[in-house]
View 1: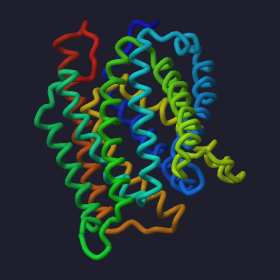
View 2 (view 1 turned 135 degrees about the vertical axis):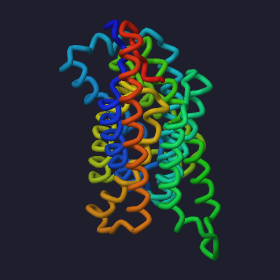
View 3 (view 1 turned 180 degrees about the vertical axis):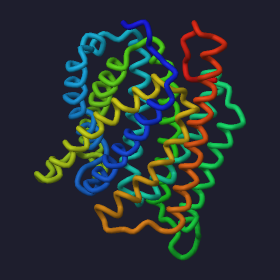
View 4 (view 1 turned 30 degrees about the vertical axis):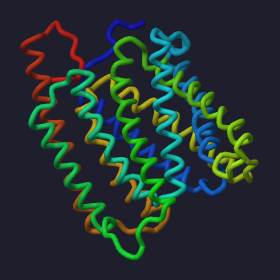
Length: 324
């Protein structure tokens, strides 16, 4: 196991997180496209199982396969897999009940919970500048989703309400995953974290197969999908595997509270994907909100660089963890 498990490199952490957010948005679009064809549990299995070859190849190429197969904290991986798989399943179910932008907007609760959990469980000090950056990002998100907050004759149905609750619970679980990963990187290599998550998620997803048979509910019963659906599900697994590698690596180079605001960039990517794939033009609120989110990100980058310079001057022999 390499001794230098974590480093304070905010630029690399942010780049990895942004790349992962984009790929996760691509994966979400794929899952939504097939949500009427397969149940969430089956989608979770494809996303997890077909990520394993990507992760294995990545580990072999980097000469880290032995680290991926030998975890130091086995129960930590089990809990990480349970939280992450539950969040994935709830999100996939919500994608079948709600529009993609709505799911994305509700998912913005994750950074809020992550900042709170980082202070509670990791003891990270959340200073004024980072709190201001998070607030700036939230303002941008509110501007984006404000047109969808009106209540009238087209109020959400019971199914849509259930979908919103599922996505909100998934946001809490994803925040716990972020904090748990930040702890895992203190003892385990990134290789083990990404490998065992895919394995655990695949096994947990398989449990929904007998559950669907027992309860015989259309939302649970696995089906034999057409070829185009199979290929899309496999693609979701491949894309998800790459994204999982990137997001896990990002927490090796930066703290959870520092990276949390960059989840807001998914709204920008959602606008781009909507324009390219679905011929949807970004609205004024989306453009304005994206600008505020970007401003908050730039503020965090500047602050982290300043803190990194201060730490390097005062404590040259201390291994930084990303938390100021």
